[in-house]
Amino acid sequence: MHTSSRVIPPKVSLQHSFSGLFNLEDIEKAQVLDLGKTKNLLQTLQNFLKENPEKKAHIRHLVFSKNDLDQNQFEQLLSGITAADFKELSSIDLSHNKIKNLTAFKTWLEKTPIQEIDLGFNELQDDSIEIICELKKSHPNIHLNGNYFTAKGIQNLQKNNLKMTASPSFAN
Image 1 (tube, rainbow, N blue to C red):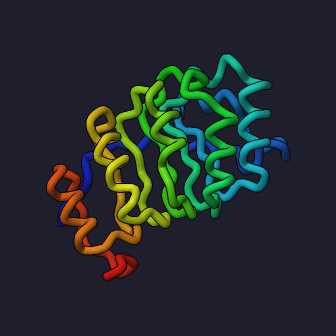
Image 2: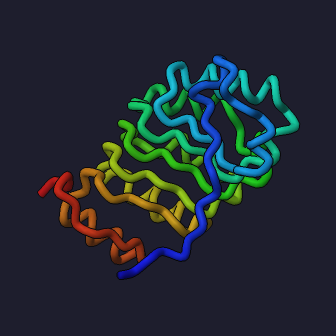
């Protein structure tokens, strides 16, 4: 039996931040800000950044997974935060949303040293491949499984050393 040696730090969730269940001191230890399934995501994040400017420097991993972010909401999120807000940010999880286009994300990423990006299970299609290949040059770990790439799109990704495994959600 294979066990993973990857250590995942504990997560701190802002889902309960306004109910008094959220302990901001945990962010320094956890280094993960998990905003998965958060109502009013942008407002919650902006409130956190405004109220806790000293805490954001400790965040290494941002999780926006499973928020059903459509393209417009995704772009609003990016315009509401800057990579400079998170000086030690090394990964961002945007999986399981409805993101279709990465143009705004590419611009946002130009100012960050993020090493790992999870874009899996969104609505990315072949027209995103050129941007993905550009991102790969400075952001080595990009996860893309579960998007709607055609066989030709997957071949283009593989030519650019972006490995993917087959997924039932891929288009033919």
